[in-house]
Length: 237
Length: 213
Image (cartoon, rainbow over all chains, first blue to last red; front, side):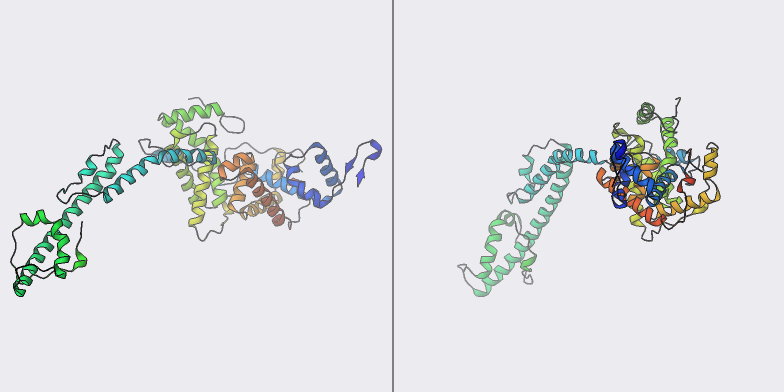
């Protein structure tokens, strides 16, 4: 429906449904001048839509100006200052905006190389083959570690690894001593001079070769009661 | 430091920047001024979302502390208030998540009209403070309380703080289009909730307008 034809100005009268879609933009002043005129024309002849516009404008006015919320007491600012740490810390709890978070993504991507390098070094220590005579992980000592942060991660880990290795060596020594006693018992009972390659011998051969240096250092223990420990408890290197 | 306040009770951006820079250098007086100039606006925003005085005060204090802790990294392309609202809103959401029994309890006994110390209302505002106007304002705030936290925050920031959808999006961590959508849905819900009120002329309770009856 068009009105105002005689004046040479054509204003389309919108339906309530059309106005409803434009109402937000109308209230916020975001419509073009011609659209504003069309909505105005509708509101002049539609009390219902006019009522809704007034309602929303009133809500906005009340929210804007009716400051009826309880207020903080006058000592609030001093309490905030008193609760502040004396030394200004690094902004670790910085709450980011959307823009700042996008920037942070690239900073993290660039900064992640250090922990990744530390992790790679740590796992290389775990899987690096070492000599059985060398208790200390000397292979790691050859790596030039310049970053203090990496040292803090790697050094404690090496100490733990060192302790574990020494414990395992001790366990193997106990096992070798016990197994040696059992082997002597078997030889004595079978009365053979040429050592047969029994199942027990095959099991022990790997351990003997591996722990030969330690066997030389240790006095053989004669024990009739010694029994081979459970094989599952042995830690082999 | 001589602080000049604008007519709307807010700091000029250059003055706000100077206060922040002084606070960054450890000036307690500047930090206190920053708190005093923003505490009521932040508290009103937080209280409207949480509707709990104790929680609102706690969150305001936490928000200021976090803001000052990270003050050295403050981006001066933002307003300090925008940053505070960002922190406050996220703390509000955390608080709501923790409160399983969140029901938005309304304590209208604390609503006593304008704050003490504010200027006397004009003639039109006196009309706006009539019994009927007070009742309608209460009804409006009840309706706002029934919006979702995001919708409530959007309505408050849009009308009370006069922020653009873009700025609101920075605070609520959402695109401006989503803010627009929240505002649209909030208005539709308000229309639904307030539609049953038999009010001849809503403009009767509007503040400071020549047309207010």
